[in-house]
Amino acid sequence: MRSGRSEHASIELELRNSGGIEVAFTLTPNDFAGKEHTVWVGAGDRARLTWPTGEGRYDVTVTAGTGTRFAQRYAGSVHAG
Image (cartoon, rainbow, N blue to C red; front, side, top):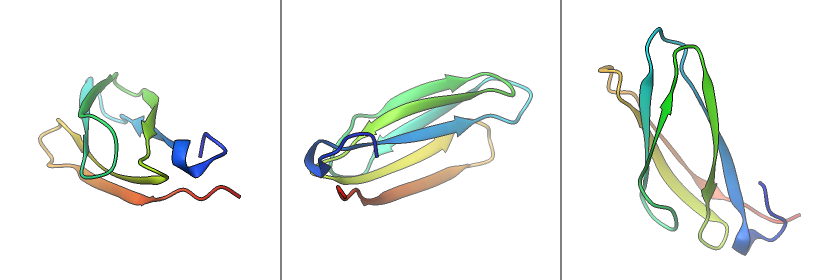
């Protein structure tokens, strides 16, 4: 969690590319907050990005344009503590 109040919270995601060519990762909101976003990550590199929440809740699917059908869904809530 990056922000102290759950209604303004965001999460940080790290995208890693362990392959030998640049890859496009696409993040797609399923609910709550955020807009579809594509991030290019170079071979052997990583990128960090911040994803917003809707009142502390997030639901986002990450796919990678590698031809392997990689898809990972992240959903949950952030609670201020």
